[in-house]
Image (spheres, rainbow, N blue to C red):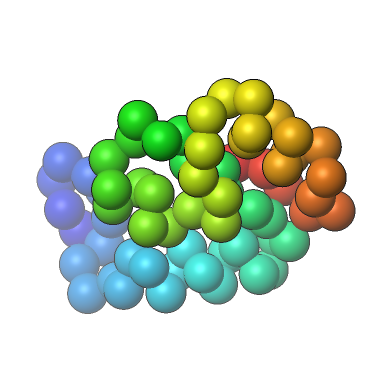
Length: 64
């Protein structure tokens, strides 16, 4: 386990995020000023207004 992040070593983080996204019927919203690594994992990227619109339109159970 990584002492800083608490994430077990050997975990494919992207695959784990995708698994949880499907399992929990979730969408991930990324603001345009977030790091590219976060934007790459996001279902939608935009400014606050655009993201609030996407959140209102989605049928996801979890919005992160």
